Length: 231
Image (cartoon, rainbow, N blue to C red; front, side, top):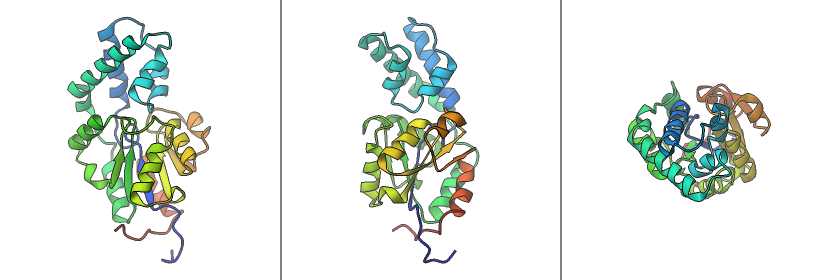
C-alpha cells in the first residue's frame, strides 16, 4: 500500500485475561476455591462465572450473590486475591503465538497498550511471569479507573499516548471490552479465545470477531497502511 494511505489505527489496546493470557480456566477454578473458603453459598453456574469475567473482581463476585451483604463480598474478594496471588497465577501462560503477535505489531510501528479489569498488582505479577510487559507503552488496571464498560481506561490511555480515540482499536474477549470501546468512540475487535461467545460479542457490534489474537495482524494488514514508526 502507498505510504500516503491513511492509517485508521495507530494504537492497539489489548485486554489481558482471555485475550493475550490463557487464564480463563484458572479464573474459574480460583472463583470456586474462594467460594469453598467462605463456604456459604452454592457455586454459581459455570456460564455465570464466565459471563462476569471482564468486570472488576468485586463487581464480578457481587453479581453472583446480589442478596449477600457487603461483608461477605469483601471476604470473598479477599479470599480470591489471596488464592490467586498465592497459587493460581502460576498457571497463567500466554496463548500460543500471542508474544509473536504483539512483537510483530510493535515492529510494524503500532503503539500497544493494555486495559484490564485485573488489579495493578495482579497485572504486574503476570507481566513478570510472562516477560511481555516491556512491549506495551502504557497500561491501565481495574484499580486505577472505573470498571468496564466505563470508557475512562481507554480515554486516559489515548490521552497519555496522544492518540485520538478514532485512531485506536480495542481488542478483547468480552462484551465489556467492546462496550467500553464504543463508549470511548473507538473501534473494537472481539476474540473467541476467552470468556464470551460469538453471539454475545456480536451483540456489541465489533468491527470483527476473530478466533484469537494470532489472526489480528492479518486483519489489520488487510485494512490499514503500515503506520509510521512510533516515536
